[in-house]
Image (cartoon, rainbow, N blue to C red; front, side, top):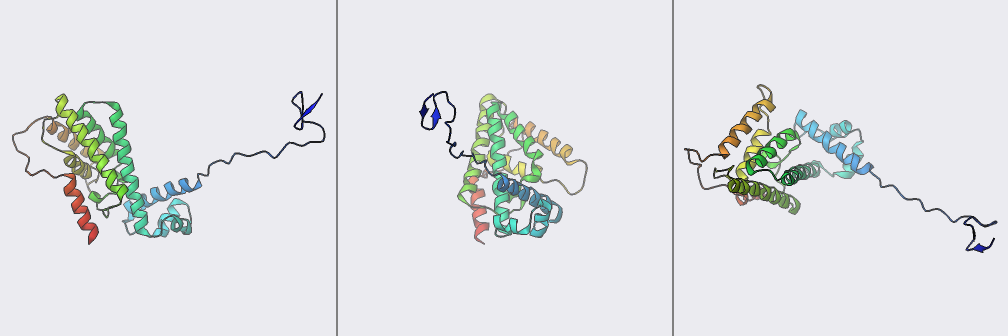
Length: 232
């Protein structure tokens, strides 16, 4: 039996030698991401219940973390609101990408988008819901992506014959903002909003007798209004 580099030729450790230190693979730390999601979910829940000026200490307590943890991640309420808005845009883009993969007809794609937005409506803390307009490059790109997907659905609908109305992505976005803000009183909101979605989709299918007032409202119009509000 011979030794080679501290090992015997049969693969065992040679006498009098010890194996080198084992390198342990560090498991990625997920605490930070878990705390982030807890804080954002708690913030949205608390704001729905108590309004946007709910104390940050209340949000931290609801998330099960200390106030110091909240402030390490978000220096103030504005920073927290910005993160919630970015999260909402991410949800919408993800929904649109999933629908795009379905390859369904244009009007069906719009309907799928409206239905899925209704399901996550309480998570959509966005300017058309009253949140401060976010003008970061990331937010603007997200809004452009949302518009691009919706315009593609509408173009597809015109090509496949399922959409005839002269509407654009902004019209769909405004309607989405309306159905994802429940009325304060009344019957089940999902039931009521579901009926409004059906009416909207039926309207897309025809060029009705009542003309849509012009000029159309574009993404540029929305961005300009956001920028003006942000500047005040």
